[in-house]
Length: 299
Image (tube, rainbow, N blue to C red; front, side, top):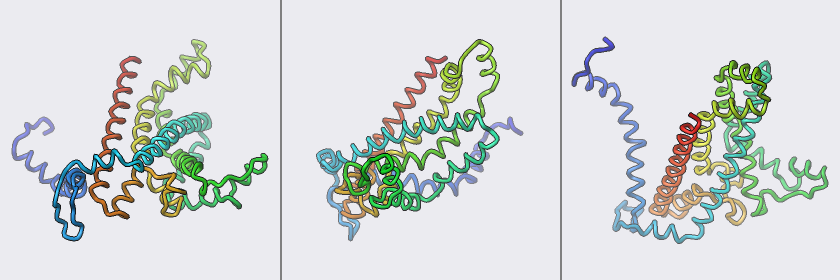
């Protein structure tokens, strides 16, 4: 039965089984993608009648000359460049420590994972208390060391660092969980053989742990970069629906949100989405090619 030759009837039967899900995917995923591409070329659109009077590349031209777009792009890039590597490094360090104490690994794994599954709004409320300029716990600890309290949520220079710190803390659990799974899949015989050959802890980590964790690290890097460029909830919730003081924490998705929901400029919003998609796609391809290069080099 397993080797039964495929025919038109069996193929049609399989498609009929898949048809309900294909319809759902088509309506809620495929159609919106094509509609967004089309909408990005709307240059004259009546939101009341739904009639498109004119199409063109004007939205993209305007986007590439908009200083607010470049500010949002810069803020997003800063966010990604800080959150992704710092989160991965911290997660890897914590995962390595937890992997050496298996009897409490489950407890700490749950503790670290709780922030990830907690609502971003709830997390932001807690962190807004921590960041409070007068009563916040962070400023209290800074005061112990003689450092003056900071206006975390009021100072434009501290708005993005505040978002970055909160995002790193919130995302640790997911990274730690996957890294622990990756560490658990590494055969202990490799470490035993390395110890016999006289390899120290750093050499075992560099030559065994890191290469064998490369697929997991690659996955986390790609997911983190994609999620980083989509950052919105953290900014919206932390600053009570504002993009930080004087717009200092505006990200690409927040810029898109303002164009779509506040200014009703659907064409510009869709064009922003397409540019964001292109950036994420290019970075993902670069990461994939880099991972393939290191795999071949390691082989």
